[in-house]
Image (cartoon, rainbow, N blue to C red):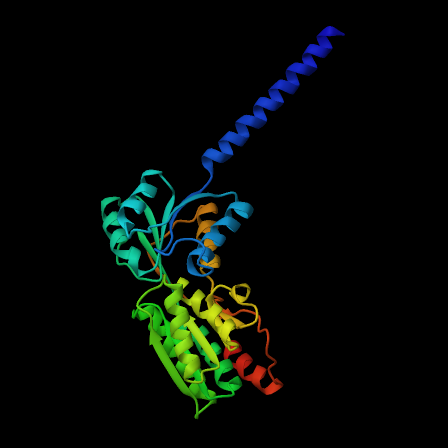
Length: 313
């Protein structure tokens, strides 16, 4: 009887050890990513947070692991190289500000795979992901142009760079497509991380009778949304669904699915696929951009049809 008991105990111990070994092996073999967010850091309710959420979902659903850095002092290269030293399968950088550091490190570490979001690199080991921001912003412009009561709407950009100008261009084209009488106010803050400046620019637009304002300005735009709520006008968020930043003001948001894009990268690596240094461009058709749910206002059937035509074309 004692032999049976000891045999049973031995089997249980072996099973437990085996489970521990398998668990350790799984952790060791997990695909890992190093993420360098924008200079604004996490908590922007926008670009950086969306990227982080994509990797969180990949961690929960795919079993990957990841680490991240926030380059608050503009030390992109040092922070990114710190991630490289952690031996991740892929290093991810957000925005054009990360490109110079990534290009330099990609050359220094040719066997390391990199992913650059919102800019295009010509390095063989850097996969670039950009979005057709003008397509998503066009939808926002349609709504603003159709629903404005003052015929004055506004756009607030962060820095005067190509990717932000694409937001502006799409928004302006959307407004003009449905409202010949609309005046479109445009201001650039020169910063992505100054919420007070965003609020001040929004107040200036309200004083010029703007009743809808759209931002593409990162954390600066958080100030825009909150000031719009304070002033009793409507606003549009960007990159992620920013309704919860200002629930009495945010009609919708131009969704830029950075989260989906990074999740897809991790899924490729999980499935044993390799990155090829290509340029991936995501628009409405690729479900890279679109609209968050429309709240606070009602669209007529004809107004909704106008939006649907663009989305489904």
